[in-house]
Amino acid sequence: MNTHIRTAKPPMDSTRKATLVAGLFYIATFVFSIPALDLYDGVVNDANFVLGSGSDQGVLWGGLIEILTALTGIGTAVALYPVIKRHGPGRAVGFVASRTLEAAMIFTGVVAVLAVYTLRQDFAGGTDTAAITTTASALVAIKEWTFLLGPGLMASVNALCFATILYRSGLVPRWMPTLGLIGAPLLLTSSTVTLFGGWEQVSSTAMLFVLPIAVWEFSVGVYMTVKGFKTLPDTEHHTTAVPTAPATLVHA
Image 1 (spheres, helix red, strand yellow):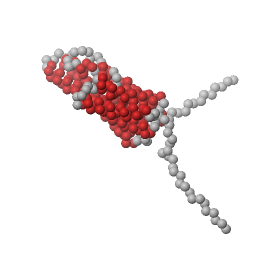
Image 2 (spheres, one colour):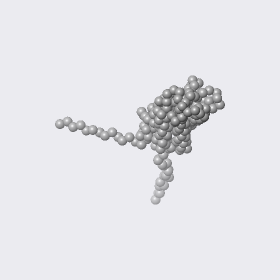
Image 3 (spheres, rainbow, N blue to C red):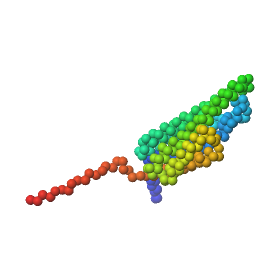
Image 4 (cartoon, helix red, strand yellow):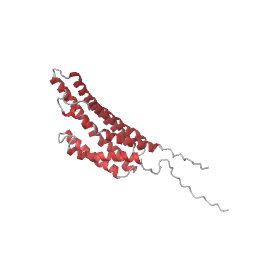
């Protein structure tokens, strides 16, 4: 009689679990961040949207997607913190803080867009159109500023905190954090130029500056999901051996 012995798979260690969760969150953040721009197009670019111009079908979906973007962004930092704090405690805290601040800016932008949506629903056909359009324009301005200071600026801070840890520790291939460290100042430069009116945040020139940081975030997310961090020698718990003096021979 043939018997089949099933060997249990070794349990996944805590570091692998953390990198798997963080990698999935990274990919989700990347994917969720793409469609919101199109869904918000009418709110942001049509001054008469609040008066009933165009369709509002995508606004609520855009808000939901951006909320998911913010939450998965925080999730990447929370999942990774127990692992990366061993290699750079200060930068690990900075990574969590910058991700949280980025999420807060995203939430603020979502609230502004939903407020325009509410104005459209409640005051459509109203007589005081000047006041309504002025209020809507102010809310759209809040959305645009949060988009610049949140995903536009904080992504560079995220990369500086996280990529420096990965570069120095060797937890991933060196080219990956190098790309992040190149992309961070490029994105910071682009955001600064946009701040002073040099070009629009969503433009072909700005997209060229954003490309390296986008590739960095997607590649590190895929790597953590598929492979996880490299296993490094554990030197934290090793004690240094104290040399002992040679025994003295006593001659009778």
